[in-house]
Amino acid sequence: MADEHGSWQTFGERLVYDNRWVKVGLTDVQAPNGERWEYHVVHLARIAIALIVNDRDEALMLWRYRFATEQWGYELLGGMVDDGEEAAITAAREAAEESGWEPVGAPEHLVSFEPLPGQVTAPMDIYLWREAKHIGDPTDTEEVGRVEWVPLSRVTELAQRQELLGSGTLVALLYYLASRNA
Image 1 (cartoon, one colour):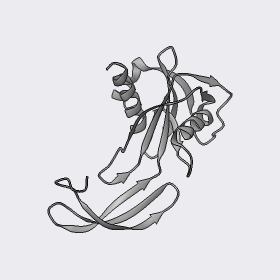
Image 2 (spheres, helix red, strand yellow):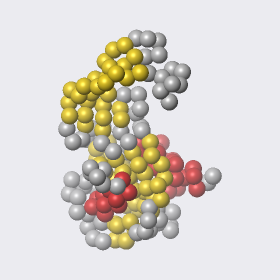
Image 3 (spheres, one colour):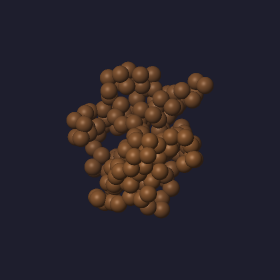
Image 4 (cartoon, helix red, strand yellow):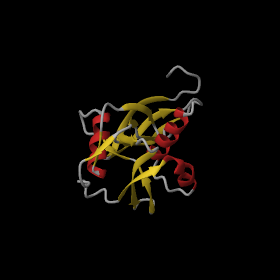
């Protein structure tokens, strides 16, 4: 891809901030027009998301508050992939911790994507399960919210009301709905 017309060249990156959740780098780049400068890039950890759909055509979601955007809304379950952990394992673990529902069976990989590729690396992997068993109360006390089985027929309405939080939730639900109607 680097040989494609219009591609940018990179000559290295220096980190200016680095921790477990976010890294900020200045990347030495040259644009297709020949200009060269340091371009800021934010690197976020890989996220794995569980889309659990039941036989009543409902998705398991968490109604919660996000302080950064000052919003209440629905999110699918998931979290940051630990070093050396498979993304599907992360999605299943996070679903159980956040909801008290454990996905059953092998997951289906739905889609992987980068939500803001112009300035941010934030890889997201979405996995689908069609069954889950209730194992108890949520154990992740940081992810406090109301666990609900939300009818998929509400996805468009919730999206219009900006009550589906995050690109991982929105992309997963819209991708699932579009692919099953294809």
